[in-house]
Image (cartoon, rainbow, N blue to C red):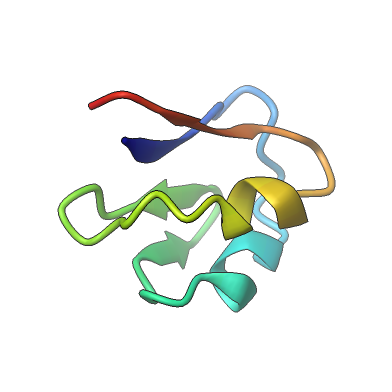
Length: 58
């Protein structure tokens, strides 16, 4: 499992990166998940105010 960002919905607010325990999300204009470091905890998906992150099978 891994977190995926819907880039059409992401506004780059950084809320997901702030709560990621692995610090595997970087935000420039959009959030980008380093899939090799993601532990599929779902914290980012729970925190996203736009509901644009889902945890899916790799």
